[in-house]
Length: 226
Image (cartoon, rainbow, N blue to C red; front, side):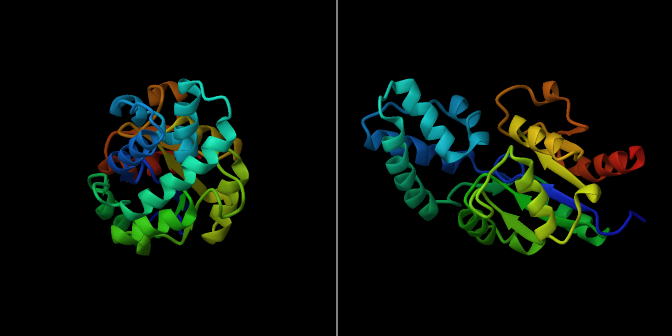
């Protein structure tokens, strides 16, 4: 039997949920309201790991806007208002997620979410997809006033879930997640189906999975190597 109460901390966008359709639709609607061209889907997908504000900022910089800060704050507010109303129009859990979460819970793991999404939006999304029940803590960029890759947000998420960093593993899809885990001295499992800006294997996570059907074995591999 696995050692009890190890904490598995998941990123949200691109890791638990395929949120790209609703995020990108909201981004491009926000840009259109400013008279800006849409970001192509494939390009925008790679921008998601930095959060919605980061997506908008990159679009503004590319447009050559002089006063990025003022535009960014206003556009972010517009983005959040629209996104909240359409957060689960097309966003869905990645295949095999729910059965995997149930299996991990049955095996004695506690589960948590550490995301750069706002906490209330994260809870809203997981509520609408009936996934909130799986997690002992759901923490966003505003929960502790810091965001990934600051390792402290990961440490505090683990503590809020009732765990300890020495008995935790991070699961994510981007360089931000890998950097956060490394800075917190946690092992990290990366998924290949997320929104990484670069091929995720080049970031050298401890384990790499292409399906949630592989997650339990990846966790066991990390535990065996510890």
